Amino acid sequence: MIFTGSSELLLRKLQSSSQICLLQSVEGEGFFPARVLRTFLKDASTKRNIPIVAIGLSLYEALPGTTAEQIGTEVIRTQWLGPEGAKILLGRRALIVDEIDDSRKTLQYAVSELQKDVEKELLALPESEREAQRTKFAVFVVHNKVKPKLGVLPSDLPYYAGADVDDVWLDYPWEAM
Image (cartoon, rainbow, N blue to C red; front, side, top):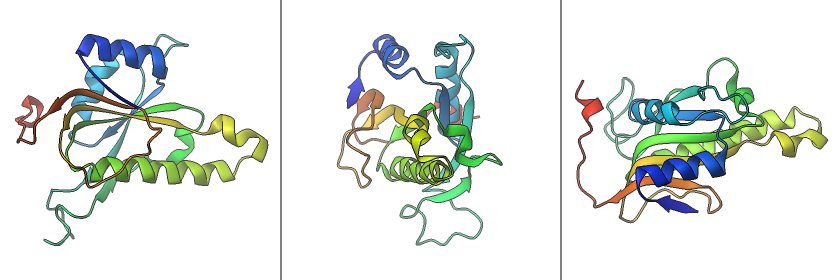
């Protein structure tokens, strides 16, 4: 499921269909869009702001201990869920937020690794409770580059893009600080 459109239409779609109760921000690039979304999306049951949980992933950044061969080819985990781990995701609808879907490698990594972590936590629950506690993920990106992707997302994963854009370099104002 792919949704694009005006920001007003997109916000209405996110508010009505997802009933999101957790924003999963991809470190760096996803923080600012997640924070802006948080202003407009409220927990349906409490009417409070939706919490933001950060994960850190790097594909193009030279980090200590990485090799030149890894940059641009291997997603490196720099920060993950924290002491509670995937327990904080159980039974929730979580929106994974990033600024851009370029190669889709980072998004594929985030979705697959979070799903694996949730599955491990579900195994600790009685079998009768597992399905009700399964996390429902969705993805939001500010921009989706229209080009062949190297990564793959599950076909049933809701995917929201603020806009489809050509394959050009984009500078975001929040990166200039």
